Length: 153
Image 1 (cartoon, rainbow, N blue to C red):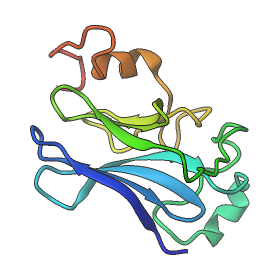
Image 2 (cartoon, rainbow, N blue to C red; image 1 turned 90 degrees about the vertical axis):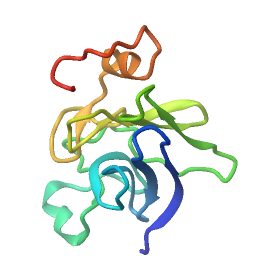
Image 3 (spheres, rainbow, N blue to C red; image 1 turned 30 degrees about the vertical axis):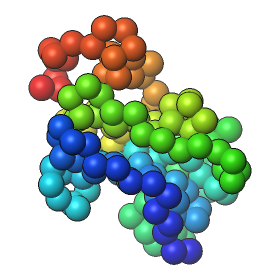
């Protein structure tokens, strides 16, 4: 299926653009390099379909495939409603972005990584990292954001 760009937004501080795209079988959050359309990092958000087996992933000839059953949570299959509200939440410095659906964070991309953190992953792998609540709270100013996060600056 053709990808559908649901929302996009450029941060005025970092000049990075966040894009949330639906690829028909899965949905992904992307973060670009500053002042560029080139994607620097991505974050798998959910599958529209039941998570395939690893042996079935080759049928999805795309750079944004659905997460397989060995990595995806059993609740990773999600079909948004027309009434669902999708929005971005930026870190204070504009270098990190999260995708919220109806005010609930589903995934985020911190600085310095190629794959983000998703609530629907059960372990780290090719689709990204398992959710890290402490890092999310720290990056998005929900528990006293700091300019000094080891390994990120």
